[in-house]
Each structure stands twice: as structure tokens, then as C-alpha cells.
Image 1 (cartoon, one colour):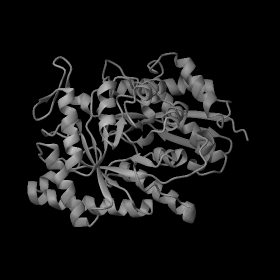
Image 2: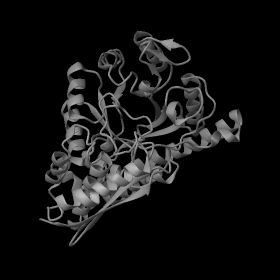
Image 3: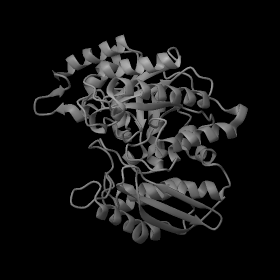
Length: 421
């Protein structure tokens, strides 16, 4: 089937932090697609870049320039094209941009169009988005993911002295996504009560991703809070923990040390992480070192038996993923579509990781929108892991709720991943 693009319209909208971002509508004679682009707080230097003016990442004029590029440039290139030919449209935008990081048209402009085209094609084909996307992912096994829920914030996501950025609940060993989500929600509410009693009600305000940010000084303190909440909820044997260190944010390049409660060299930091893993039920560690240190990533991957995730290190970039595979730096890819800028490239990145026997975890960004595209993409990839924040704030629950809908639509055919490793 062929469905030609009849119109493309972009506009400036707000993300969950109140910063401007790009939303795009794509029309065919029998369908319609809309997509909005998220943005990150701790962004890696190897990511595709949002178009911005004056060096300000969230400058409104930069976003308006991206919107203008969609309406005045990209639209003319893709009107009349078959929206079911995702790769052709994505490659057309990549070629016209001509830069390595999409800085001419803007990654926010290109991605908004790319995702809206896929939605328009699904709508025109009268298919749910996740089913349509399987034609792009070439995956036959639809799989509901284990959600990684960020419930305690540090680093760039909070204002305290806790340097590690995210502490997550990971509901393994459940029989359905609905059961896992319910368990996380229950534990999240217990955690809120514990924090209120120990640190005061003012400490239960939530951050960008729905997590709490009490005044904590160490990772151990954060993990003990999680352990208490899981114990009270009765899920000690079913909920594990994950950390996103976001180590580039506390790496001192001039001194080549990581500045936590004290300064750590790479080898000392490895020992520190291994001690945390030994003493707590941590099953996943993301970005434990800075974004160019493939070697230290490789060492902790070799010395631990948990999932080691590359985010800033890999930037959803196929070439960097190949380097990570060659150096055995990780065993998991964090997949962020706006790091690379098109759906086609994101799926290529996922396939490289999967073919290398790595895990793939599709991820939200801290500056999110109500768009739930990544929920459908996760199911269509069959990767079984998604990072989508706490069970709070509408832009986070939009992803949980879409996955609950998909699980309901699949009924008895719904499969849920039960283990991370």
C-alpha cells in the first residue's frame, strides 16, 4: 500500500519543563500523524543537536528556526512521498541536512517529521502504531517491557549533594506489565511516606521525571530508602534496583577524577560501584564513567555480572555502538530516538546492539512531552526494557498508560519480559 504525504505542519509547543520544542503533523488522504520531540537535561556531546540560536539549547528562537525548517524546507521535500517508505523519507532529510549531527535542519525538526510520518503511515494503514512499526523493526515477537522507574533523583535532576543522578525501581519476575506497574506504583507511594517521615513533607516534591529529591549525601542512603519501601510493599523478591550514574556530570576532566563524596580515580570508582552492587540488589548500572572512557566501561562490565548500560557513551549512534561492541564496553544500549534524530537510525542502532547479544532499553528524556511513541516502539522492537520515569506526572504516565492499553489489546497473546539479564 502507498499513502502519499499531502501536508506537513510544524509548531512550537512546550515540553514538561516548560521549554519550547517542536511538534509536527503529517497528513495523507486517509490518515494523520502527530509527534512531539523531547529533550534531555544531561546531554552527551555526541548527540544529534537541537537547532538553537546564541548557543542556548532551549532558546525559543532556535526552536522557531527548527519549526520554520520543517514548514519551509522539509515539507517541500516530502510532500508527495509515500509515508510508508520511512527509510526513504528519513534518508532524504539526512542527505539534505548534510551534517554529522543534523545541525543544519536541527535534530528536533528532523525527528518530529520522522516520527509523525510513521504515525501517519500507521493511521493510513489502519493499524495500531506498535503493529505498524514491526514492519520497520522486522521483529515478530511483541513484548511488553520491564519499566525502569526513576524514583529518587540526584545530580542534574536535583539540587542536593547526591551526585549519582537516578535511582530506579526495576520490577522483575512479574507475569504482566500491569502487575509490574501496580507494584512500582505501590512502592512509590510507600517511598513517599518514608521520605516525608524522615526528611519532611517538603522533600516529597517531585523532579523532572517524577522522582523525589530529599537531601541525601550518598548512594547508600538512597538505596536504603528504596529497600525500606520495597520491604514495606512486600516486593523484596520481585523488585530490584538500577542506577544511572551520569558520570560525565561529575567527572573533572582537568584532574581526571570523579568528584563524589570524595575524589575517585577510575579504578577506585570501579571498586566503589562493585561494593554497592555487592551490598544492594542492583541489577543495572548506566553511564558509570564519562562519555569517552570505553576502557573503564569494559572493565566494570567484565568484573560484574549485571547490566551495564551505555547512554552518553554511545548516544544511540551506530558507529559508537560498534566501537562499544568491539571494546566490550557494555552489554546494553540506552536507546533515545532524539540522540540520533530519525526513526530509521534509531532502529538501526537497536539492531546492531541486539545482533551483538546486548540488551536494548528504550528511554524517555527528562524534558518530555505527552507523546507516547516510545511505548509503541519498545513493544515493536521486542527489546523488553523501557526507562520511563516514576509513576507520576502526565508525560511519564502517558507511556505507562499506553503500554497498559497495548497489553489489553494483545490480551492472552501479551508477553512480558521477566528478567533483565
